[in-house]
Image (cartoon, rainbow, N blue to C red):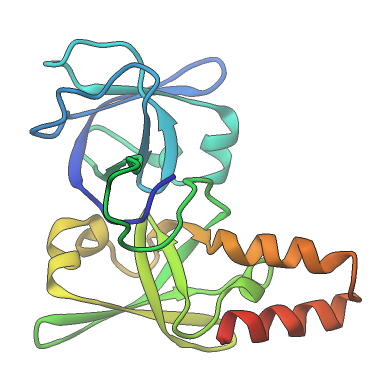
Length: 213
């Protein structure tokens, strides 16, 4: 499990397509020499498993066909930077929100606006997952835990503070760029529990009210 608090931003040093899937290698951040084989690492919001390697070598991951088709990782190239977060340890402080690292979809940036040292970034809202998105609710975009500042029929805004802008890849995105989306997983569990008890319309209305409360 992750929390959407990005710990490092690192460049891709190798991206190799294979018959099925791909191999991804990213520069190992300072202080990450204790990452172990099999450890879960969120790479721009996608939970990946660290492959064997020396502590002085880049972090390497296998990418499945599902990962390539569902996320933006298939479009990576050498030099492009990604957001990194290690899995939450039992004794860690819990910041952000519950993030599983299981990307639901990708969406496009529709606007970037600066006001003094703060930014408002807008994203397209797809009907297939719009029911999980509520104003002032949480969403993970490229692995970053963000709060939905405003919500419209076809898009939504997130407010970005200077620190987040400085330490994540959001500052490298422009209109038309795609990002990975993971909606609030708790909303999915609530929806699933309501399915057997309510009709579709009643279920969606109850879910909306619970998320907004």
